[in-house]
Image 1: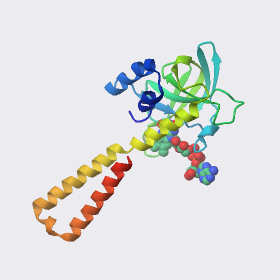
Image 2: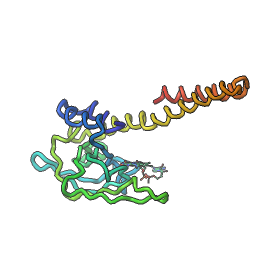
Image 3: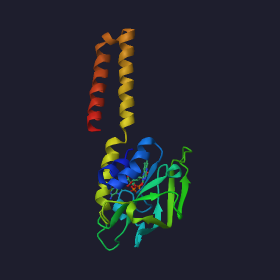
Image 4: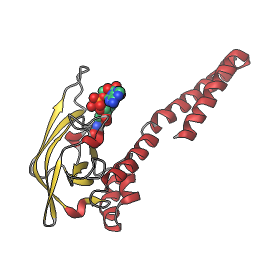
Length: 203
Ligand SMILES: Cc1cc2nc3c(=O)[nH]c(=O)nc-3n(C[C@H](O)[C@H](O)[C@H](O)COP(=O)(O)OP(=O)(O)OC[C@H]3O[C@@H](n4cnc5c(N)ncnc54)[C@H](O)[C@@H]3O)c2cc1C
């Protein structure tokens, strides 16, 4: 809903939109994001996971890390290097990879807090149909910027809504118990309201 879906809506073909979007909207299929690698974090374009074209499929080998919810995902929006000789931002493609494809191994990472939300994903000659590429071959960096724009825009929408609801509840309670007459309290709530409204506009 927050990154793969909007990317497919914006950049996918009619067939890709028809195949992938309805299950996302119904909550029937979950996507994870296979972008980061051990040597490609902030410098994402340094990614090395390789996809070699073999007829109508790509043969993908490499490793991803910090893949949130990989254990439960049905699909992975996967960044791969399709042209190792091109400048690093130009040789990348964006693929939709089924997580149950042979050669995909998910190894959960346990955080200090005990959760296993992240995983490493190992890819050993995974065959991905070329028809699962979103955008043109080697144009994946541009598609990635589309994905990240959606993700940055919507990632915290739930938190903003929760903040606004809590503020409404606080104001209602202050009106109920008589504290609403306190100008200091009203000013503080008003300021928070302005900040949350600004945050909502940015979202
Ligand atoms: C909650 C969470 C969920 C995530 N989920 C996913 C996911 O689902 N899929 C996925 O692919 N990735 C995911 N990530 C990974 C995330 O995108 C990366 O952590 C991020 O890209 C940074 O990479 P890195 O951790 O390797 O840090 P690094 O790139 O090693 O950076 C470490 C520190 O060095 C600084 N730094 C790096 N380069 C420079 C420089 N040139 N100059 C100055 N400072 C620099 C950075 O600002 C940072 O403070 C997730 C991360 C978090 C925190």
